[in-house]
Image 1 (cartoon, rainbow, N blue to C red):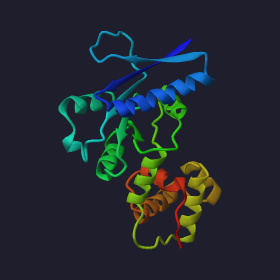
Image 2: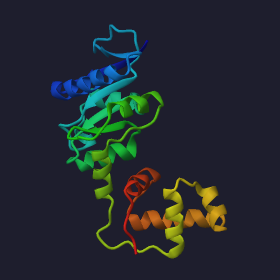
Image 3: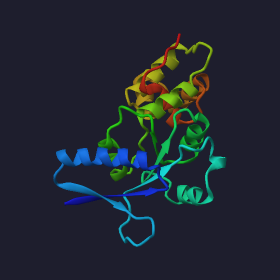
Length: 208
């Protein structure tokens, strides 16, 4: 039997209870696995598959307690799940740009606990739907987005999962030219990296 190890650091008991309820429900459909809550005192020798930190009281990284900041830097990545309020957009922006941790909005209503578990085991970052929407709203420019015909084709290829090499072959352009188009697209959409570009593309973007 596989045992998923979960550790919660100074987590609001209501939020922790919600997570364990979701895990218990998952147990009903997966009898060949279980989960275990690890204590904080270091007595357990098991390494957590996922450590949960409650950041709902913070509005920016500057407010994070020293011990939590140290853990954030040490466990940065798929083994760390931060609980956040989606209204705290500055904090979400800082976390998404500077760390690779997973993010779950505490007001989330449509997340699946299996997605969080699978992401941590596969070493992938998990971003809950409400956090994705918060990031998307933050990066949508107020002015209409005007892309050239070629930029529209490049963006469509990216939405279909093509990489730079595949786009260059598809459009009969050099990779350098495609990279230039991509930079222009990101500038027009008001994003700085591939992560935020992907967030915006999840639900599509209107452009002229």
